[in-house]
Image 1 (cartoon, rainbow, N blue to C red):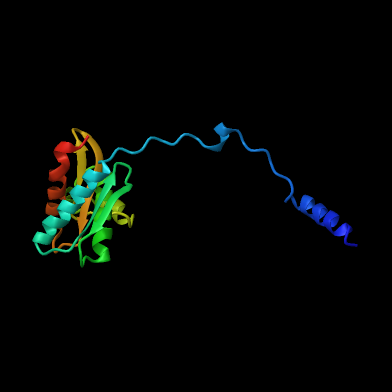
Image 2: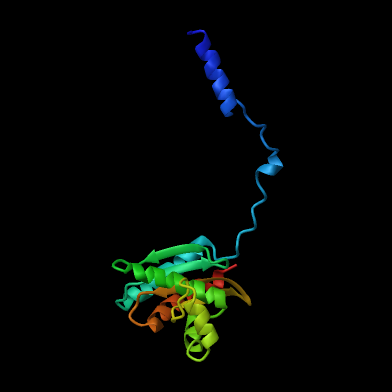
Length: 175
């Protein structure tokens, strides 16, 4: 009986497909070429902009979260000041995403939704969006390469002032 166990085991493995291996796919079939990365601020500049936004708001005794996104809405940097609420970071990210989607500062959208019901409904229908002041586009000339959004300060106008301060410190070095 002991002589038949290895043969029986091999037979079971073959019938279950364990002993067979498929040929490896050709190298070209393994991966499609990666798409080019979305345009955005370099990481060091995104970090500097976010840090400046936090410093600016901290000087105003405001605890905030700040997000810097590339042109595809991918988070480059997400920072929160000491003592900031989770909502601040989420709000900053949502404002930045909203500015990117609608191609304008979130403060502009905040005013537009007051008179444009279609816009208001579109923004309200997507929980990722926040049309309160606090996000500005990051542009090189006419090209939008990202957005910086701040949330959590007492007053969205303060959020926006901190976002603008962050952008201003890096604007001339964007490429």
